[in-house]
Image 1: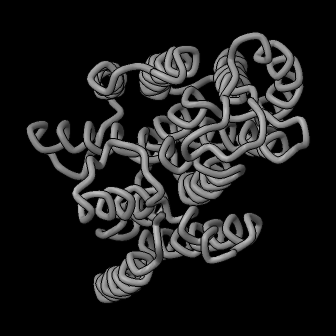
Image 2: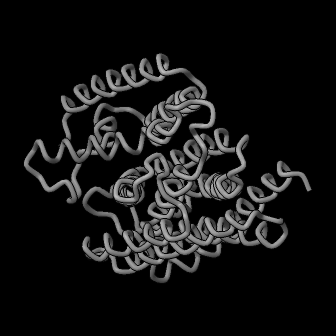
Length: 340
C-alpha cells in the first residue's frame, strides 16, 4: 500500500473514531467531568470536559492500527514508543486535573509528570538534535516540550481556539515532514489532524464538549514532540529553527500573557484576564473573527516556516528580523489594551 494511502487512512481512522466517541463521552461526562462557569470561564452552564479523551483515543488507536498493518523501520517504532508513553502520561495527568476541579493537581506535581513524559521521549530518541551535546540538547528538549504542553493549555480560553491552532500546527508539520523519511511524524501528525478536525465542530455545537486540561495538554505535548522529529535542515542550514515559526502563535500567546502578568506584579502561573483573545474580545471583536485572526496568523507563520526550510541565510535572516519586528509591535499594541 502506498504511503499516501496509509497517511490518509490514519487521518480518517482517527477522525471517524473521535467523531463516533464524542457523543458517548459527552453523555458519560455529564455525570462527573463537568466544567462549571466562574472566574475566567464565561459559559452559561456547566459543560462536559472529556473532548480530549476522544482525541487521545482516536489518535493513538489510529497509530496502533497503522503500526500493525505497516512495515515501519525499527527506529521509527522506537520513536513512537516514546510518544505513546509520554502522551499517555500527559493525558492521564490532565484527566486527573479535570476530575479534581476546581482545585486541580498542584503545579509541582504537574511539572514533575510533564518532566517524566519528556524524559520518556528523550529515552526513545525524540529530542532536539540541532546540538550534539546532550548537556544542551536535553535541557532544551525539556523546556520546549513542557513549555508547549502548558502553552496549548493556556490557549484553551475560548471555544475553538486551542483546537484550531492544533489543526494549523499539525497541518504545517505534515506539509514540511511529508517529503522526508520521518514517517512517524507523518503518521502521527496526520492522525492528530484528523482527530482535531473531528472534534472542532463539537467545541462550537449547542450541546458542546470542551477539550479539558487532558485534551489541551495532550495536544501541546504531541505537537511539541512531533515538531522536534523532522529533518528541517536537509535543504537549509537554518531549517532547524522552523519549529519556532510553526508554533509561533501558541509561543507568542504564552510569552505575552506571562509578560503582561509580570509587568503587573502578578504571578505568571496564576490565571488572569491578560490573554490576547480576552483583550480582543473587550475590543468588541466577535469570537469568529478572533479565531480567524489567530488561524490566519498561524498559517502565515507556517508558510514562513516552510520557506525557512528551503531558503538561504540572507532570506532566513530577513524572516527573523521581520517576525521579531512584527511581534514586537503587536506586543506594544496589546499591552495598551485593557486587561480588566
